[in-house]
Every structure is written in C-alpha cells, then in structure tokens.
Amino acid sequence: MCGIVGFVGEEQAAPVLLDGLARLEYRGYDSAGLAVLDREKGLQMVKSKGRLKVLSDMVDGGKTLSGTLGVGHTRWATHGEPSDTNAHPHLSNSGRIAVVHNGIIENYMEIKEFLQGQGVTFHSDTDTEVVAQLLDYYYQGDIVEATFKVIHRIEGSYALGILCADAPDQLVAARKDGPLVLGYGDGCNFTASDVTALIKYTKTVSYMEDGELAILTREGIQVYNDLNQPVEKERSTVDWDISDAEKGGYEHFMFKEIMEQPEAYRKAAFPRIRGDRVELEDLNLEDDFIRQLDRLYIVACGSSYHVGVVGKYLLERMLRRPVEVLLASEFRYADPIVDEKSLVVVISQSGETLDTMAALREARQLGARTLAIVNVMGSSIAKEADSVLYTWAGPEIAVATTKAYSTQLAVLTLLGLHFARVMDTMSQREIGEILEQMRLIPAKMEEILSHTEEIQYFASQYFNHESIFFIGRNLDYAMGLEGSLKLKEISYIHSEAYAAGELKHGTISLIEPGTLVVALATYAPLFDKAISNVVEVKSRGATVLGVTTESKREEMAKHSDSLIVIPDTHPMLLPSLAVVPLQLFAYYVALQRGCDIDKPRNLAKSVTVE
Ligand code: M6R
Image (cartoon, rainbow, N blue to C red; front, side, top):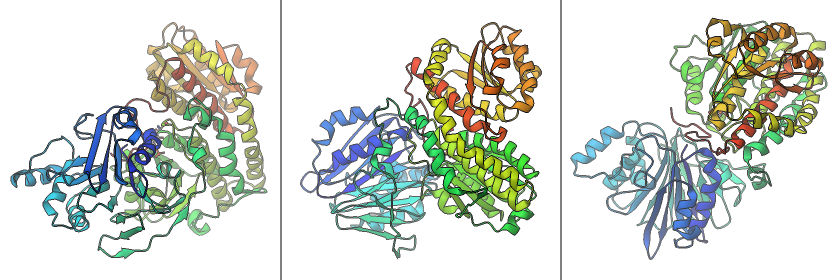
C-alpha cells in the first residue's frame, strides 16, 4: 500500500526522501512522487507513474531538487488508475499546499461536490486531492489550523504529510487508521509509514495515535491530540539495524527471509520456553479467564489466516475445545457470536491490515478479550489489542511472507501449550515432549535449507505448468493452503489447495495427464489415507511431487515422480518444517519464470485498505 516519508533537516531533502521511499518499495506501489520546499524556489514537485527509478532519474537521484524539507510518496492505486496525474503529492489550486496520503477518504465525493460548488476545479481522480483543495479552502495563514479543520471534516482512513509554501520550516503529519511513525534525529526529524524508511538515520521513534497531528521542524516534533492539546510522546528505540532491512548479498529479500527462519524461530520461541513450561510474560490473560473459555476464535488474512488454520488443528487437539478460524474480512460482517467470555486471537505480520484491525475492533466492541500475534512493534493492531505477543522476526520486506509465518506458528503453538497447562487438557509430560522437539526445529530447518539445490531442480522441471494442485489431509491440508498461496502470489501460476478427501467430490475432474499435484503426506496418522488419494490422482495421469518425512521416505517414493523429504518431528510441529520446502519451491519456480519475486504484481505488503 502507499508509503509516506517526510523529512526536515539541514541536508538536502530529496535524496533522503528517495532513499526512504526505496525502503518502502516492498509495500507495493505503481507511481511515486516528491514535493520539496525551498525558501527561494518555493514548492517543487515531481511525480511519475512506474518504478521509483523513473522518478529518481528525473531528479538525478534528488540532486536537482534543492530544499531541506519535503515529503515523498509511493502510491498503490485505489481511486483512479496509476498515472502521473493521480500520483501523489497533490497540489492545491493555490499552488501553495502539497499533500501525500495513505488510506481512503470515504466521504470524498461529498466534499468534492461541495468544493466544486464553490468553484474549485479538480485535476485528478483521487480521493486525496480533496484534502489538498479543502486545505486551500480552510487556509487563512495557519496550515496547522487548516489541517485540524480538514481532519475533522474527512471520514475514512488517513496518514497525511502536508507542506505549505508559507511555512518553509515545518512539515505537518496526521493519522487515523493508517500507520505513521515519527523519527527523532540530530538537527533533523522524520515521519514515515514504517520504521524501515528512517532507521538509517535514527533509531529513536514514536508511533502516532489515531487523531494525532504532528508538527515537525529541524528542532523537534510537537504532537497534538484531536482536541488540539499537546501530547508528550513516549519514545522507543528500534532494536534492529539497517542491515536487517537490506538484502545482505542475497538476490531477493524473500530468499534471505527464508534462510533467516531458523534464527527467527529461535528468537520467537526459545525465550518463551523455560524447561518443560511455556512462559508468556507479555500475556495478560488471567488463568481463570483462560479456564472458562469454551471456544476460541482466530481471525486473520492471507498467510496469517493459514497459520490460524494450522492453529485450529493444533489447538483443538491440545485444548479439546472448538476453535473457529475466520477470515478477518468475513468475521467483521458476520455478526460474530462473541461476548465478554470469548477470546479472539488476531494474527498479523504488519499489524496494519485493515480487515484484521476492523475485526479486532468488532470483537472488542462486542466485549470479547483480544490477543494479537504481531510482528511489527508499535503497529496499530498491537496497540489496540488487549494483549500482544510479538513474533520478534525482525523486518520482513518481501511481499510473500515466510519468516513471519514460521514465527507466528511458533508463538501460536506456545500459546496452545500454555492454555493446555492452565486448562489441564494435556499432561506436563506431553507438553514437555513438544517443547523439547520445538528446540530442535531450527536445526531441522537448517538441514532442509542446506539442500536447496534439490528443490531448485524440481522447480526447473515444473515451472512451466499452468495449474498446480496441493493436496493433503489435516495439518497437511493446512500446509497445502500456504504452499499454494505462496506459489500463486509470486509465480502467477494458477494453484489450488484441497483437502485430499474432497477430491472425489469434484476437483478430481480437473486432473488430466501431466497435471502437477503436490501431495503432502507428512502427518503419520493419516499417511495411508493420503497415499490412497495420491494413487487416485496418479491413476488419472497426474505427475506427483510428494512431500513426506524421513520415516515415510520409501513408501512415498513408490507413489511420487519427485520427492521432498523433511526430518521427522512431533506431529504437531510438522507444519513448521513442511512449510520451508514449499516456500523454496514457490521461490525457485518464480525465479525460473523471471517474476518480480519481492514485489509481485498487484500486491502490497501491508493491506491498509479494505
Ligand atoms: O500483515 P498481515 O499478516 O496482516 O498480512 C496478511 C496478508 O496480507 C499476508 O499474509 C499476505 O497473504 C502475504 N502476502 C502472503 O504471503
């Protein structure tokens, strides 16, 4: 989704803004722009459809734009096609106010009609332009006052960066339901959609809250709440480095992040394992509340939802209570049956996914307790949930999530084991055994990652298939969902995941000679049933890429054209290992097809619109 960077300091702003925008590229975008304010030259604006490189070339890496104050933007089109005109910043008709925006102004048509009635002409198809023109309308010499008026009039979601030619030393930022972080430098200050854009310059940050407005100058940042009262922001220090958000010699962020999984798993899980117990110090749910739960809800989108699907199988087995896993975009409109006795667990890497955020709010409004499993510190979901368990995976840049998935799964498993102890649904011995096996997961991931060439070879055999099916039962079905999503999102191959037992109810009609079926059969209790389904597709001519465990290698090899083998582990932990080759397979297939792996078409890393 859109990315915003704002800078005020002593050095030339444009190169800093371009550098920040480059670090936000992963969020997904189709056009980009800059506005820079120079005391002599006034407001200068450059924008362009397409990649950031086009914009950067237009201004020679920023050198041709003078001025030490500015805003930059990468746009992911919602209202109006990707074009130079619709790209941000948007300039008011007076030419004195420039605006960048992330979010959607829901009542923009009403405001547009009102302003048109006042004789204002519009130049773009965007909802954002109404903000620029409305600022002009309210402006009477004080841009902060005008901004307050505007944010009280607009409805919807916004993160805004505003420059006014009459205020050449200040940048105004405001947010509601759209992320904005403030960065405190030495003689310079920043705002950005996320920390990645400014960490090269400062690690001291604070996170803006809904309804807040910030005035950034070289000397400092003053924040006001929606009642126009000054707010003292709590500052925090980012605990990762710029190198974590760089490729570090890898060709793609996705590959780097796949390779980082063993370490990410260690960081997410090990500090929470104490002997044969789980310690979730950051969980503020009383044991009595946990014990009275007669059902749990897990709500998320995309891959985070797939973690929830695995979680349903795991937690139902651990807790002997029903677990409902729901897509956030469905939950929020489903009139969900939750109340103050319910726990709704939301899962989100970014902590900014709008549907997940809305589901969280819906759950809270209905009185439910909410627990968020989130990666990005200080993100909106982390701030609003009653309780937060961070996944500590570090920055994830590739649109296709990998290490966030693995760490979410680790944290959800630990949550299940903690609940099982409190609810007394598993023996201490069983819990201890799983924890012991969890400690071995990173090393087993490393073992899988030391044989990437095998998966690369399979990808080279199968990359030109146009349709690929993933089948499996139980946890293997849940893994198939993720394997299939990973493949389709980065390689653009049509792919579906099916519960293997469902094949006969329709899907098997799609199997014809040569159709590639990725058959997951890691879960030992259902291995024989899975093999029956493999035999069914093979007898209709399918080519089978099998995935199984070391102990089932021989049996699975008899039924597979190619075989991926993962180490054995406790059955409940198999997904943590099985996901790794599926990620690698998707990666290598996309590589063979020459796809833009880190920035797949039409996708954004953090989906902050509905
Ligand atoms: O940041 P979130 O975890 O809330 O994001 C949810 C989905 O948008 C995300 O998992 C998406 O499906 C990924 N691109 C999949 O790789």
